Length: 317
Image (tube, rainbow, N blue to C red; front, top):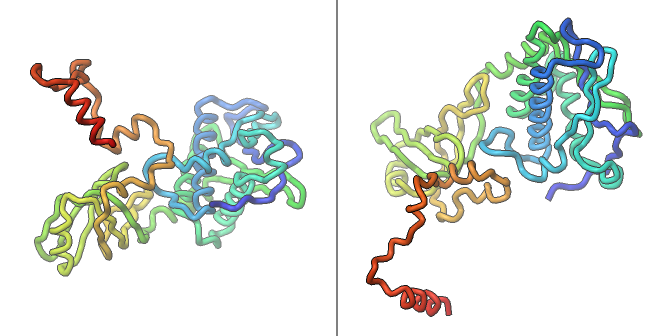
């Protein structure tokens, strides 16, 4: 369970301001397309940084954990003039922030430090992949003809100075350079072992997870018998994966360990993810009904319904 952080909220009821400047921005006004992009990508950056602080994966299919959505969802509470300064607060009563603190405040501080580091030459090296990608998406707005800079401002609060970090085109290029470098990462994934190819030297297989796209894997000759035995079964594999440039997706994983999972364990980590109906259906491969007739019973006319019900109730005793 994540520890509660005793951080007092800012006196002006804001945890974050984004100052948008450029030739297409007028005092207290901002075009709707840019506003939507900024709000969406800012929230993505907040969520990914929260995952990193909580020790969670920042690259994964499906939504973020419910506790992070509850603690770190922000609301746009105002647009100030001058240029256009978007003002955000946590989407819950301010009294809660004052009493127990909020993960969102720590997340906003950490993102400010990350952006400043990127602008100063990139001394900060422990930036989670998902955070880096979300900042790149947020900063993409400065490449438009209407916006030239985006300032990430942490308002002054008790014990903390006002902090400002700016996202400009040079900063965006530094983020892109980091994303373009080939990377490797340790990865563990659960899924169904499928489509094995035992031809040397490149032995290959595929893992189909409950949610998300299948992952191609390679393995060594000493795992031939184990892979063959576990075909079409739920497994957990761990190894080193190649992370594709400009994305957070693994291109291929070389299996170091592989073990069989009980069927009920597969997708266990998704239980508290608050998936939508569409995502649940996709993860369980449930298809829409083609007609009401599919709901009809398949009992034959001569079957005795009472006898069937009696047998069901007897088996429960």
